[in-house]
Length: 238
Image (cartoon, rainbow, N blue to C red):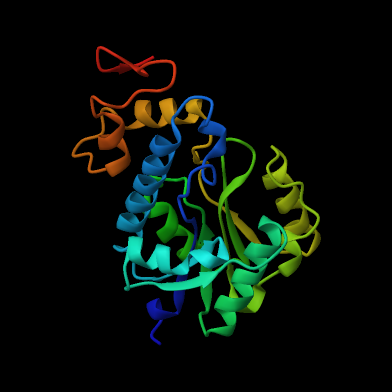
């Protein structure tokens, strides 16, 4: 491996079965809409990742969905089932797996970040040249990215965290500090969990030049409606 071949993006993906992805959107969207939306999230993120000088390793759930994932996303990626009792253990085990495979730097992201700037991911690998870890705070109090160099990986960063709360980022930073980790923080960014997050995504992107986002294009189609009606009014988000 050369230097960039030793970089790995660990991409956590769920198979988009009805009722299994983006469940907090269920009061507003039909299940088929949520699944289609999630597919567009993944497509946009993969488009961003493919332009990086880094390997992409997909860690998926549920464990029986490998064939379905491969049929959906193709044969160019490596697919590994997520292993663990909660999201923290799954992330910890993914890093252990990746570093055992010979990668020297790895960053992990989820699949609800369709407009995550590519430069943030580039920065994360650059920061790992001079830091033990890197983390990207999310606007909801969690984090959208976490990364380590192989020789500074800290499994304890994923233990005893109250997941899905607004204290995840703060708790994780506290653990990193307890172990004297030199940690770089990326700019804050936004994942998409709620209908308000979805509207904020549209607002961020509606005036972006040369917008190639599949998520944005799908949301702008005339047939998109929430259960309570369109979120658009004269082409503006309401």
